[in-house]
Image (cartoon, rainbow over all chains, first blue to last red; front, side, top):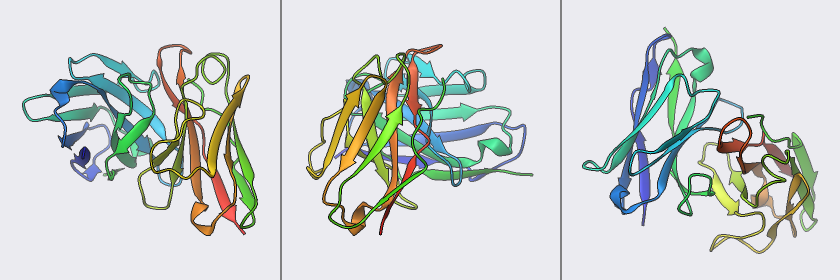
Length: 121
Length: 112
């Protein structure tokens, strides 16, 4: 079955760039589907960050768009998130997920376990 | 994109039914049938419970049902069980400002 696994530094300094990768197993990214990133600050709700198609087409949350880049590497069957100029407000559990249908706005039925990223000096 | 509005908490006794509301606008909940609901237990990733307003993924109990009227979507859980105690989030496609996905603030369900 399809599985997602996030990886990356658990601690990032303020003003630096947060970088995470989501490794996909059980499915080839090149075959289709959008792939998304969602985050959840401690004790707070979910926030969609953005989504990418295997071709590289992207959709971003407008509140984060100026700082976010999502990319895909089909050769490694993974996709990545970069969030620049981070502050303490970016401290959160970051999830990668796949929508059930073929479009970025479909419900996310497959989720990674999540990775906690803390922004602190 | 503004977050969808959910009650902060709801509660019910075992065996009872509860309903969680999710209010948006005509640019999201009211305009499209791409409303979904997620269950999240502490320390766990969200689990999809309802998609496209009222559809249940395979394996989800039929005690969970979804509906929509105007700009408000609802999740109903019947025959409450202790294991249903969790946070619940709604989500919708949105065409407000730019195309995207918006979540609700979440509702804490307590089974008394």
